[in-house]
Image 1: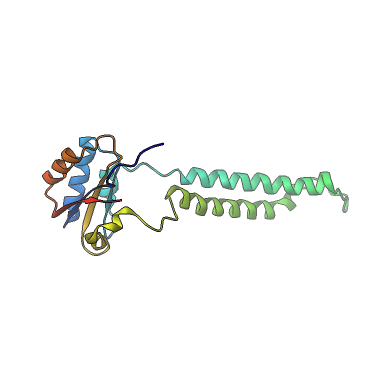
Image 2 (image 1 turned 180 degrees about the horizontal axis):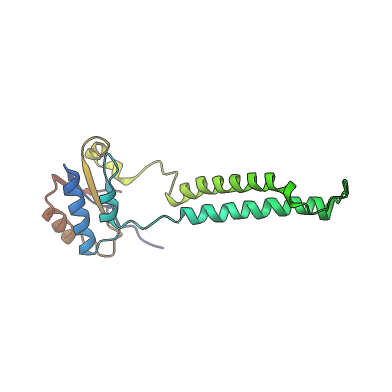
Length: 179
């Protein structure tokens, strides 16, 4: 069983997005990989500075749509040609044009459900509490402050060295994040 580190990580607060992006780039160059940044608005430069990998969600949605498409088609095929074959007007039992609407609808339904459930799973939701909520100043992340948190689970994390590294980035405050 994995033991939990004594703290969640170190949180550095910055007043400008430029300082946050510079600190995130420096942390990545230093070798830190388990970190996250918080900003009151989205920033593409910040995503690049953190080295965020592309999401696996599009592949999951494609697979969910394919499962719905194949499942919808074969469900109708089985009902019309195998389980209860009825010859209506001399038409073939496997008349694919009549299967298109239901197949299409099940493709969309399966893809949409996979998108919602996949997004929740990949984001680790629902998560009613996060350790950063224990830091009193973190509520300003939605107003006018920018934060960089390096997690203690990072392989490169050492409390003294990481604190010294973050202090060199000139944050306005630097705090330990308790669990």
